[in-house]
Image 1 (cartoon, one colour):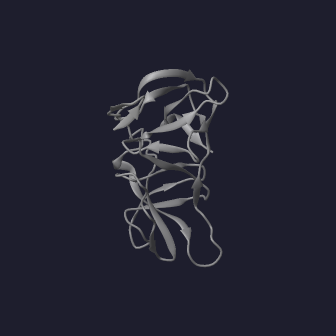
Image 2: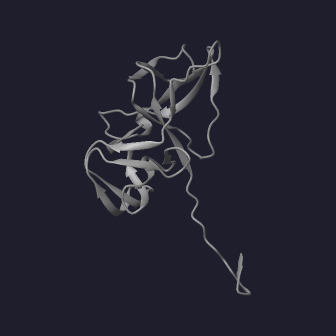
Image 3: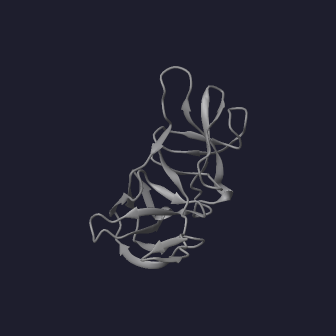
Length: 179
């Protein structure tokens, strides 16, 4: 209930839960079926690849310690699927816990369009409500403290167009390169 000018009324607020987008900083990062080196490698991603943190209920998932590393569960790009999805979900070592700390991937803050793409106003469950289009190689800034995606759609990355009229919305992460 909200009181405005002496009148109580109900206020509906849409809660958007977001997850972090990472940029891989090492070459040949293994993605495994579980948190640790004893689990089989299910994919390998290159330096510069984008990962999207898997947080099904929002609120973040703490890393799991195994084999002197901290492991996070992430969506990784799978060209045979064409988008971030549960079919491309695995564990990768975030950083080591012995010796000098080395991060295998880090938060991203900007994204560059890799092809012509559109910004949308709505993210769940599919992108909808086109706001504007962008050409390839166009830079967009993070809307949040770091680049984030929507938990209900890891392909929906929330961005702001600082080069244009300051519009903000969601862009398909498959059409972007986090930096």
